[in-house]
Length: 272
Ligand SMILES: CC(C)(COP(=O)(O)OP(=O)(O)OC[C@H]1O[C@@H](n2cnc3c(N)ncnc32)[C@H](O)[C@@H]1OP(=O)(O)O)[C@@H](O)C(=O)NCCC(=O)NCCS
Image 1: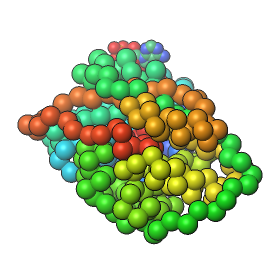
Image 2: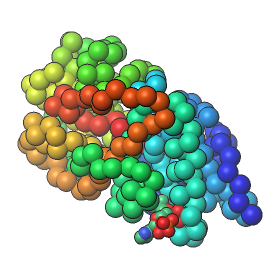
Image 3: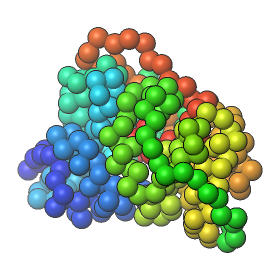
């Protein structure tokens, strides 16, 4: 017997089994954050009393919804579970927003193509183990710059940023900001938005200086070659390649506008 219902905080320990089976980086704190940000948009499918599959949605106002955490436990694959949960996620998002996006793995992409998504751009996960020694960098406390982030990302993700800022975050004056958070396999650096490469350099170095010797993931848009150059210079190398995909939502939409050249690190495959 299968049942779909909303994920709640007490489900998180069981849901982590799906993450671990897929080798993903999200932690229990990441799942709790998704549930806190969008309590009506995090779905689980139970089969025979076990959690078998998940899909989550985060809405950024009425402009954009982001689908993530599309995961089916290996024992339950090829039964249509991801399809039915992604359809549920789309239905939830469609009534609320103009555009729906996601970052697709090779395994997920055929499903999303079948559900009306189109390729938008590649997105790459870069990885490094940080040097043991790094000069410390002084930055300013994080302050939300809604305008700069909106120009870069294309939608108002203030609620997400204020939530993530509880972890680790700093600003370089009014030139940009960076965030980081722990992961199951590696520290995750991002999001990072900056007006100029020099500011991005200081922001990323700030994170690096605080985590000597740690493995780090950094998600980059090749649409910003300056960001890729910086990652290469800091000893990072590409580890995975996904495809950012887009589909219209149900609301009348104006054309999409964002600026990848301001994006130095994405927020995570589940957030955009
Ligand atoms: C991708 C994933 C979520 C699919 O889950 P699933 O429950 O097995 O998928 P479904 O049974 O709903 O199948 C959905 C569609 O994808 C296709 N599909 C699923 N797995 C496939 C595979 N390994 N190879 C080719 N096609 C596949 C199916 O044919 C199906 O299409 P159809 O409905 O037209 O027949 C699952 O393999 C998984 O968790 N993978 C690891 C994590 C991941 O990459 N998630 C996607 C994130 S974007």
